[in-house]
Length: 93
Image 1 (cartoon, one colour):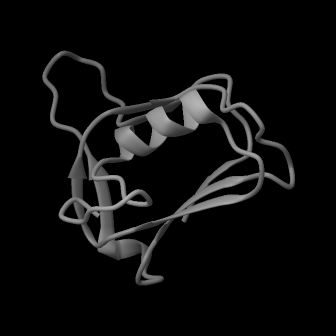
Image 2: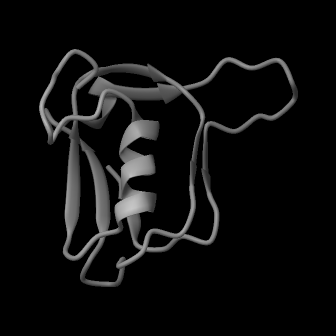
């Protein structure tokens, strides 16, 4: 939630990914993403502790995937918004 606060709130996708990469997981993790357009470029690398049972899920908090948009405006020729490198067990809904 970009306007939220608290220990369980991340204002950007990258902030959540950075926390995952540095802290890892010890169980399933679900991020409920507030409606809106998020303009950022994200790279997700290996997250310690992920497994078939310890998945990381990003999903719309409303249950409607159309309520959340992830985009990036860049003129450098790098035409990606989300890059997953050497990471498994990540789901976007």
